Length: 349
Image (cartoon, rainbow, N blue to C red; front, side, top):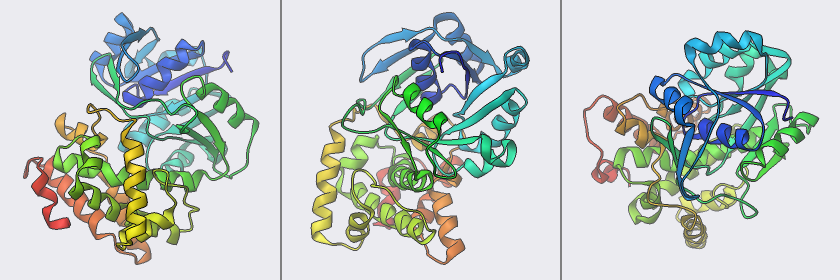
């Protein structure tokens, strides 16, 4: 695999982190990003990292969007899409024309985007990859902070799957490759993993965004923890109704989250215990993607996160009122109608 030509379209927190660490492990990686200052800084000094693993820098080639045409001389074997969710389609379209004969695309993103990618490159050229609790932020040009401890042997970060659910040779090679970054496995349940990650994300990303709290504080505070449980149970109930085989969410079975959402005392104790374990890997520097976007004054991914859950629920007649309310609050924040504050969620409890 080390002779394969690999690109990361989107060199922000996740794409930059994974791509640079693969380059450090000897893989032939090129980063592509639309943030000019970020790319310039990577070209000059490499990507510089801080956070839970200390401070260090990794040199890695990088391209501006307008330099992508040079890839005509070096066809792409593996293209990781790591952009914001609303940029998925144009990013995939951009790299499609530079794929090698056997080249394929890996969706290293949140939410459910494989159908968007497959509509452009085909289902046979689409592989899904979930990065679970690989928490990071590109907080300055050329600078990325990792805000959680590695998963290692205690928690699997990367779950790679084919859309048809079978284990293939390329999955094995991807697992080997990603294992040089953090723990990885192949899954026969890509769609269940996808919805499980979506449920986990939507428990905290919007809440962190509308309150301004960091992720650790969201898990610690009683009010936000109660809201998390409600959001999780709504998302899981919809996922089950859609036919997904839901994997454990934040180390707990979907049944526990559903019971906790209904106020079952034993289930609530299990949730509290699991959250205490999760807190051990977290630092105070971690904010959700929604909170980061609001702070940076840019569009959020809420339509593909809480809004996506609410829309899917509406399609099948299962309401998700908390997801819908969070989506509305995030959009009001985007428009500048309200400011981040814990009081924003008072009416949702």
